[in-house]
Image 1: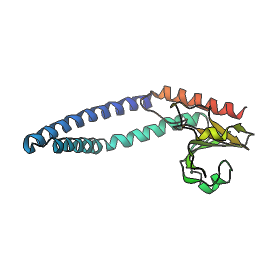
Image 2 (image 1 turned 30 degrees about the horizontal axis):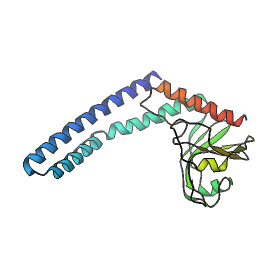
Image 3 (image 1 turned 30 degrees about the vertical axis):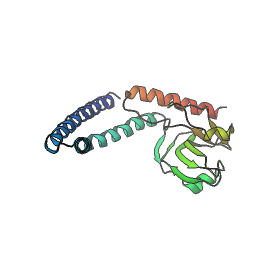
Image 4 (image 1 turned 180 degrees about the horizontal axis):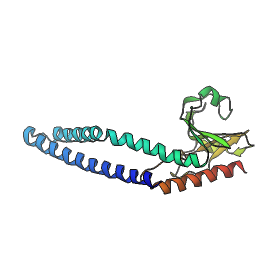
Length: 210
């Protein structure tokens, strides 16, 4: 864990430096453009373009390293709980067979995470009434029923993962959330990420024990 934390601090520091340098580069280009062209709009557009291009070009390797680190932080937590990732995304046909919603539109699903008691997927879709759902689909072999189907289509408030809005039937559940409960936020320490994941896992297990 200490090695992952060192990588996190290094990547964030380097990205911060590149952001600062891209701003300086943008200001310099904007100033020179204004001096030679005498057009404020062109100077501003040139500055923004150069700043964004400079950051994207110079940060490619770090962005890739950041994604790899996010995966490794998640992998460490999942290994501790004997869970598996990634699992192939659930197909729309498979999801429809769960009978949690009908006549789906604009269905999207992410790769799944398989725990001992359940598997979950990120899903987004519109139902036959045009109501939008954003959250996770949980599939368990345990008995799981309850919640309010109408609640899962209401606008999500708050970034923290909660079980306040869910709908479950025959061991399958739709839970409203803006981000996956095992999302890695590198602005937080590795230890803090694992603590948040552990808390979210306990919430999901409590749902299965109801």
